[in-house]
Structures are given as structure tokens and as C-alpha cells.
Image 1 (tube, one colour):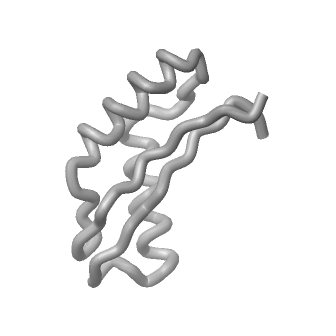
Image 2 (tube, one colour; image 1 turned 45 degrees about the vertical axis):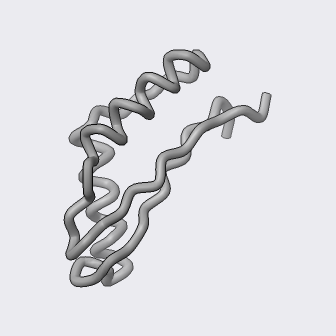
Length: 72
């Protein structure tokens, strides 16, 4: 199957805006589609922050897209 879902999160100066709400919606949608979500809020937030830092986006406005799929 090729189904999945995504959340796009705005970041301002390294702060992921409304991350808790984005995570809750991702988790709820994953449950509806019966797609396992193996990461906690804290782990995903940490990964997103590391991604921003690695791309030198901690001091500006950026967007992070989290995509969750059933397959690889």
C-alpha cells in the first residue's frame, strides 16, 4: 500500500510552533489509518530540531514536514 499522512510545522527562530497539536493530529490520523507511529512527541520534536540545526535554520523562519507512511 502507498498510503500515508503528513504534518507541516512552522518554525520561527528554532521554535516549532504548536508542535504538541501537530503531534496529536499526526497520532490521531495514524490511528484512524492504522499506521503505526513508533515515535514519542519528545523524540520527533528532537529530530525536527536537529534537522533545523543541521540546515542552519535555527535563526530564521522555516517549515518542517513530517511524513508518515505505511511502507518504506
